Image (cartoon, rainbow, N blue to C red; front, side, top):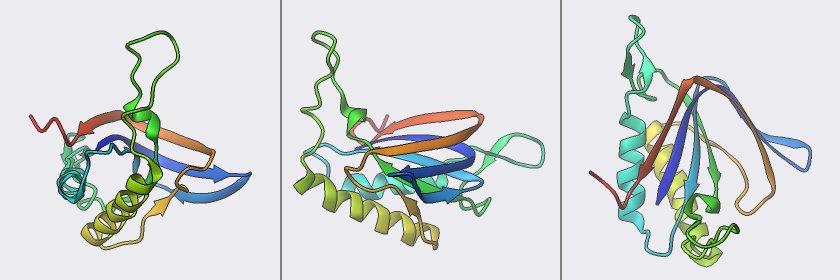
Length: 150
């Protein structure tokens, strides 16, 4: 399971010209799932995300977590995070999980993160053509892979 986390001042998701999610200060989380992922990956990533100290304290030092700043989050499923570009110029997405595996894990990720944060998340829609807008704050962009815990 792989995430790209962006610290944002604001972010939104639009589907078919309808805004379905919108937050102010918080995280935009792009989530990619593979066939090998499981609930252990979900639990590890959620712990990492909620405790990641990437928000500024009163001295301007990244010392606060999403929980510390009472921030919000938008989670967007994104199979392209597992693109392979080794051959040719057209990426291969064979590492990305098929919907029958990815959808339950996506929902488990959302539920686990909501429970950990104690608040409802904003989300995109799995498999939809989404337009994601964000104002990256910093910019701060971090990639975390549950299969690479070093």
